[in-house]
Image (tube, rainbow, N blue to C red; front, side, top):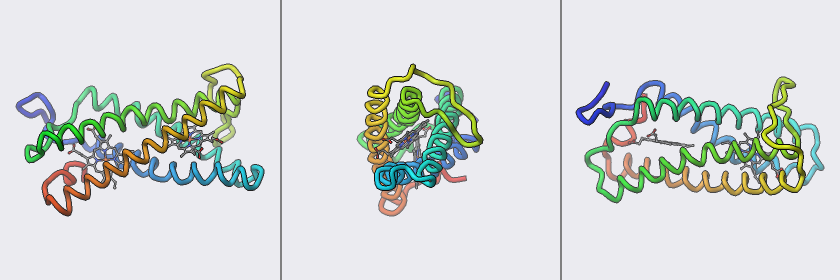
Amino acid sequence: MAGETGRPTAYSGGQKLLHWAIALLVLAMIPVGLYMVRRGAATNFDAATNALYTAHKTFGMLILLLMALRLALRLGRGAPAPEPTLTPVQRIGSESVHGLLYVMLFVVPLLGWAGISAYPALGILGGYQLPALLAPNQPLAETLLKYHGYAALAVAGLVALHIGAALFHRLILKDGVLRRMLP
Ligand code: HEM
Ligand code: HEM
């Protein structure tokens, strides 16, 4: 449904479903990613560590795919205008965090994919191999995966700000912001 400004009056069911599916996946990927790297160092890559890496790569690629769908919906359909109760600072702040999350949720999996291409370690669940983005180059792989880790930590920081803001709206300001993303 379109509002007077040509923007929809609410997020669609598909946009909400994608928001929550990606939110759950990202909230699981960050701690499991940190754990698997440390477990690899401690066990010299035992079978369980390798299984975690395979799952991490597979679910990370799923996030990339879902983000592509989500971006297409966002560009095609748009998002509702900001809640009218927001101050200019809250509006600029929330739109900046949302924009950075969109960018970083492409940057993080693409750095991971580029890293495992250069390594090369392209196997995912089901015995499939991802297509390689780059030629084998081990030092480059290590650099790309290092920046993959830093970028994932930046996502963790943005998510903390974002969840903190959602709770602030719900519990302190008691406005309608959280309801906009609920089913
Ligand atoms: C949004 C999606 C993703 C998130 C949030 C994420 C998060 C993380 C985190 C937090 C780490 C630990 C970094 C460290 O401790 O150094 C990590 C490591 C890793 N990720 Fe991801 N990741 C994602 C997608 C991907 C994808 C798509 C791939 C490959 C297809 C991938 C491959 C890897 C690899 C190979 C490592 C291990 C790096 C190493 O051994 O130093 N990740 N990831
Ligand atoms: C408990 C966790 C979360 C809550 C309560 C929450 C809540 C919300 C709410 C209420 C909005 C709508 C803001 C508005 O336009 O008025 C929103 C938007 C958004 N959220 Fe979350 N969120 C959560 C987790 C996450 C996570 C983990 C991510 C990223 C990985 C994320 C990414 C986004 C993005 C990118 C938008 C902008 C949507 C758009 O305009 O297309 N959220 N969230």
